[in-house]
Image 1 (cartoon, rainbow, N blue to C red):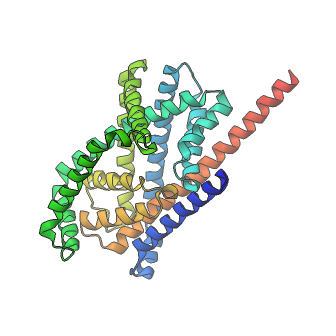
Image 2 (image 1 turned 135 degrees about the vertical axis):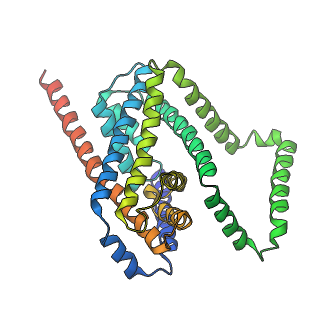
Image 3 (image 1 turned 120 degrees about the horizontal axis):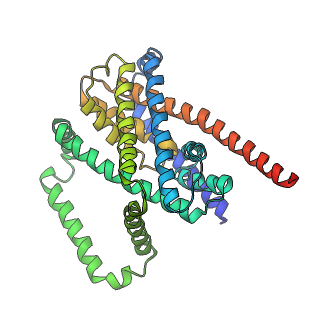
Length: 335
């Protein structure tokens, strides 16, 4: 089987997974009520939320420039912004390909080595993960009742399946058994490709964490990081205003929805489709007096508004970079 065939099958599987999750999110709902809620939304708040999201991407480009400058490269902020937006757009077509594609764009536009740009992206993701963990902790502290409700919901779903009282001991026993097996077979385990992939992942995380040591203006880097995630939060909080049922949700609810939505993006579907709608809708259901149809309507409004923004802005950025690249090559040929 060729690499192209494997990639095509993998992409098809991701798309089918996304459609399956989207079907699961919408299953059994009143589609007429869902559509009426979507069409009746106040879209000026959606536009405002997407504008805030656009600011976060500009800040991401500025932060990425700091890491690239530390590696001895200094592309223009416009080029890095365009690369970021094209990368997000690619993620909607091929999950997980956006990060590599934006590095490839800078290779073409500014002749930046892929190794250096990919390393800077890894560093970016490390700090984003740290912020995500912080927000997860905040969500647990400020939204304990919601998380407790979620726990009881899951507990109720597991009742009758082998007995809920045995669930925790079985899980603990399974984890302990895995640790014992790994210790007994550690010499064989270190020879497996999986071991080297996990080791490479942790080494990449550690190298990314250490990379801030070479950033010239460390306080500015941290300010950019906080500002990016604050924009994400404000985007969610602003989007709450588009529907009457979500209008009164709090800023702490926005933290919880952002964390849930970000975790949904881990699922390898195009742009998080299906996973984002499913998880966000149920999170809103637990956040307040929001029924499932309204939660799904809100999640679909936000998801497809972002999709439209990335398609429009990402496409403009892509064609602008192509146009500029052709002009540069033409000028070199005429020189």
